[in-house]
Image 1 (spheres, rainbow, N blue to C red):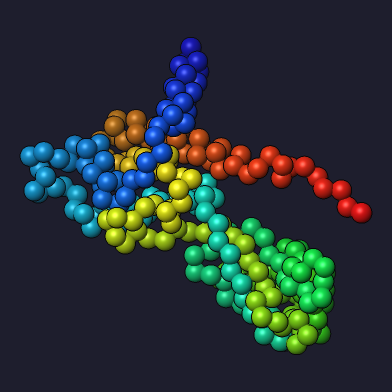
Image 2 (image 1 turned 90 degrees about the vertical axis):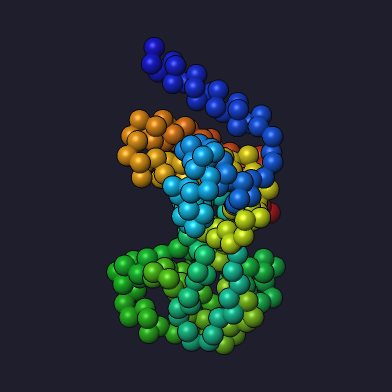
Length: 246
């Protein structure tokens, strides 16, 4: 019986999310919704329990958490490699690499996808790989904030913006009250209320109000899963069709 009720709640929230008007919430509107949710309004409006600075910080914390969990945002970085140089610093807003490719001059494919490899595998399989000759990079590895190419590019392949990194990114901080979450991505506006829930949970945690915090957390988890499913199924269905090669 409990499972049936829980499923009904999930379906109801899903329908609400799909039918809700797709209006953006700016930072100031998110803060106002949070204050209503945690009852930090009316008589306390001139002396709120949570300052604007506190809520501003929490809005940014929560929007980043959601973006990282759902892979909501994508970025692209083009790096000009240097001949005989193995490693390059990755973008500061990079969360997870999605795809790495390298430009091949004169190639019909232009950019060619590189294979991901670990430094452990290179050490295991290729003796003295760091001192091997340069050429056209075929693989890449990650070392904290750096991306490494194997083999390192020679002068022939060290062309402008030859290294392309497509990645899941961390959203920019909301600096202004008029700013929208998730870099203003209009396709995610239906999920702005998820940030309201996330910030409200942090405020309820401050109060030690476990019951209300758990109730908000349950709603947050359901909506977060709906957002993950939306993003996972967002690509055009035609992308799943295999294109025959000649």
